[in-house]
Amino acid sequence: MAEAQRFRKNPNVSWRTIEGQAVLIFNKEGEIQVLNEVGTYIWEHAEEDLEETIRAIVTTYSIPPEEARRDAEEFVQSLLASGALKAEEG
Image 1 (cartoon, rainbow, N blue to C red):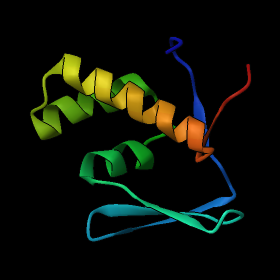
Image 2 (image 1 turned 135 degrees about the vertical axis):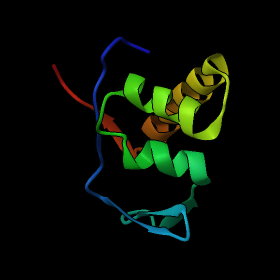
Image 3 (image 1 turned 120 degrees about the horizontal axis):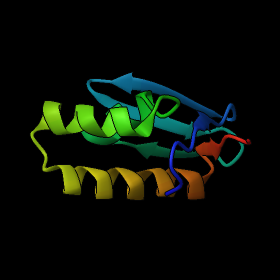
Image 4 (image 1 turned 90 degrees about the vertical axis):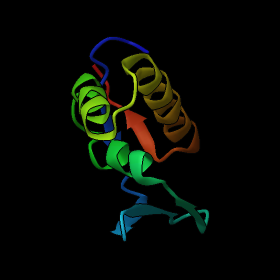
């Protein structure tokens, strides 16, 4: 993943956190995706610095740094592929 890459949430995806899990609603497709607790944390902080988010995950969830980075980057890639996130230009 590119260094210091920034993301924005797709405005065509509505979402709400319910009991610690984010529910994403893809408005045009009518599809729903439910995220686990760590996925919800990443989603809620998706427009912030990914490195800071990874550090917070390591601390909050006691996950080894390498695992947190790999999983977070894979998850962000899946959000990009689904269209929930968009890469910032520039």
